[in-house]
Length: 347
Image (cartoon, rainbow, N blue to C red; front, side, top):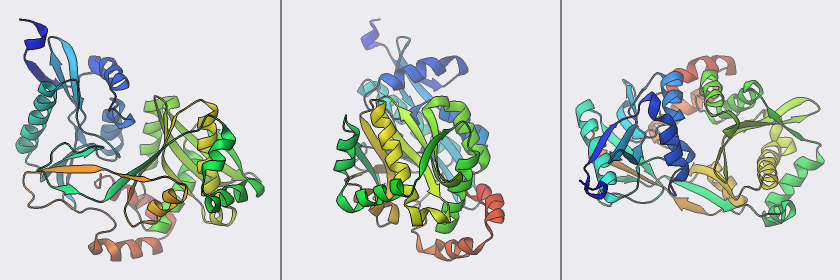
């Protein structure tokens, strides 16, 4: 039987498939950092969730991939998604036959597991008849080849904040571990009333992705001001987790931090600055727009199995407002102990 007419088969990722999977992702035009096979280990080791990474083959050749992970929580429900804790996900395939095979396999798996919903985090619409969540957008912009051109491209008021950090004497350094990052990041999310991820999660990310997971820390006179963990994929940089201590605001620590990520990416010859996803109507959304980035919609699509409607597990849901206010008042040390047990089930 000719390869073109061969049947597409779908199976789960095995240890000896990892190199092929990542080579496929690296070459696929619609792929993202979050399609990499390493997320299987990250989600399993850091959170204890089950993963279901599916690959499609035709005639022995890899024809598509779909990373999936399952979260089963008494508090937040039972879900299957591509991919929890990630901005992007969904199916990558070479042709319609592989795409349909992976999609059908995922829906069958969702039914077999008895989840509330199957979620795809797409960058373009794939299922026009599925319910969607019009909440998240992404911000991407080309990196200019010259450092000063990138500075000039920042709108005037935001550029003034970057220069404020420079004048304050802030310094950026690349860290080999995540210790200083966690200090800044945990303080930041606590002020927002959001449970923090575990220290282990960030250590596993750094261990799994190596130099493609970089920690940049900003200091002033040796004191940690802010820190960011960025992911590198092909010619893109994605600063994904970041924050600063309370003193960061007075010296524009976060503004300087993101500029340093951009400046260093320019020096490396990278082409795209991906500011990641944000929820509409939030401070993060406004901050990224202030940099001159324009939002592009993300298409989070849902195949409902047990749920009657799209799940709304996010801080903008009114029923979580009292929790957020109470969390802000909790001592930071206690929040850092309790938070990881909550946030690991949010996805």
